[in-house]
Length: 373
Image 1 (cartoon, rainbow, N blue to C red):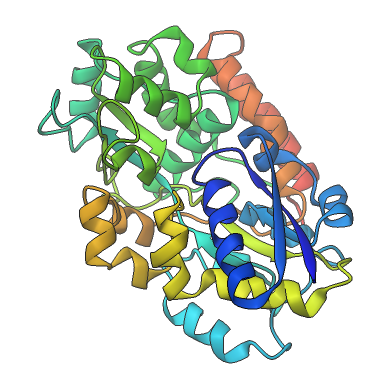
Image 2: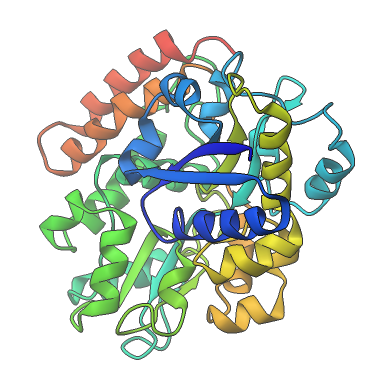
């Protein structure tokens, strides 16, 4: 029997769906795929090199793709090009394209996500649709916001892109001081109106609090999780919707999600590629993968009536945000830049650093890490 080892991330959306899909694949093909998981934080920043040396299949964050040369195997040119073309045509926004680099496809968007808004309809039937409404609700003590370093940084990127001044739009530059100042001003006002623990919280922790407690009813920017919109997952269901409108409407949310990739070091290259393409297929995505807690990545699943009914219209209610999502810079130095700057953003929100200092340091780092495209 052929055995493949895979590494994903710790959550039903990341792990349970992979295990269930692997069981079905083994039943059909005899190929055994054994999945392990790492933490959500490690998913965001653990280097690919070590993982690629130890696993055949990897679930990755798309900004790692520019580091893929020699580490990940291209999926194209290996007998699956027809399926890859169909998946590209079925993309949700730039999710599929975000795993392409230098003429090759290094991953498949088996999980599409961006920062979206979320609320408790039993406590808040009509959530705010703009930032004035968000701040007013936050002033009443009803808002949460995941703002640990990586999520605070993601919010900064979302708000900047929504203003039409995306981060690192020019080689070697983070943001102009005036552009950064407008974004940070909104973030400071929000931080002053949410609980202090939000500055240490990720989207899962915020969703758990919203679904399990009665005090809070809304979060304006948090990566969406269909699990919390499904019946029986938690005491209360959450409804995910488009982000609050800014200067460009609901465009500019930072694209997240996850994709399946194949290690260049695997001794079972054909088998690993075949599994990755199978996992991304519409039948699997809208079937066993979703039913076991997964969050599909392609439009055929996002349009599926059964999935939308089951998830309180998660996919249709956030689709506009996904279609207009912002893709992080496609440069090898970006992941290091993100990892270094993220703690600076949260420190600035805590008052441990000034806005001007954050912008100065981030621009200096961008000049060193993001100067080449």
